[in-house]
Length: 422
Image 1 (cartoon, one colour):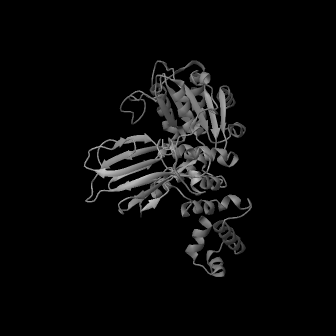
Image 2 (tube, rainbow, N blue to C red):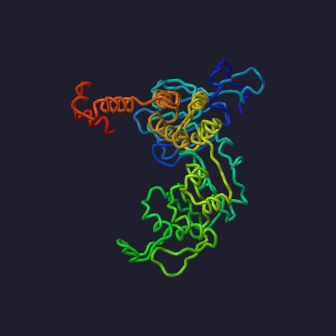
Image 3 (cartoon, one colour):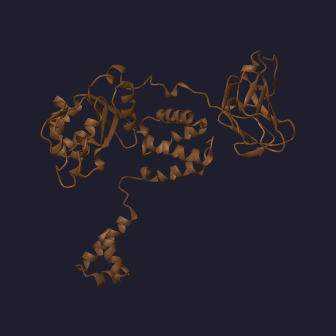
């Protein structure tokens, strides 16, 4: 390694700037990708008559697809006067032959690249990778490996979008079970079809049963059956499912003999099961059976803003994009009524629109406007509802006479009928 590098002061570069030991991925116009780590204080990039990306000490070569070859120099700039200046340095890139290059799609001659940036050289790409962190580690995973590998049933509760499906999938992956992960959302089927989807049926069991159906329980044999929206299961099926949970046996619709499966069952509910028991929608014996296994509650993002940062870091590493710290801090101030699903969906939309660097923009501002309803007092009446209530009061005053009420309100009779019918 060279003993010295240039010394300048670039305070903002210290945050996200490209530094020693960072990883670079070369994506040539043709040929295979090549990854290397920045170990030297100076590199030279050029295009030439070659078929694959090549790295030879400080020389980096890429295929030439344009008339004129490109030459770039990348040098480490010190941010300190201390002896370990190369460790605190950040890289600077400039053209050597006055031919511009592109940084994240913008044509330039000089830059201080940051992690997540992409330099386009001809038809080649130089991607400065985002370093992985421990944000995606399972250190705080709420289920022990011992429980994951057991047959104990698990109930996951939480608002919509909190990651119940993702949690169930992670438990299955850690369980090392030989069978499949089968996801069955009970609320997506009509009451008459739920039993067939869950337990299966034999040919001729009912009108339309033209062939045998295996059913989710048998499909998940030796694997995991994830029953999502368990709070929507009909009461008559709660008894049948309860019997299966007790002895592992069940009867298919129209079947004669009993079937057995070694499927491990994970339940999820977006509503409070305690309240559903009180209202009579969930049987008490079924409720106690669900609660007898392990219970996991996933809190909404508004209660755990640190999860927002974790999800952003994981998304950043998985999608190879860069989300600045100041953007993440702004995200922590948003309530995210759709929780993790809404956050990840928003990040994906920004990735598609913006590419590698995801700065704060109008798409983010729209989130704050969409959350206006959450900050209004709970007794605020929507305008359309207020209009409907007012129209109904006028109609009552005239004993239901549509013509007189519409004349007073100065609207047509059809408009009044539509208004009170909403």
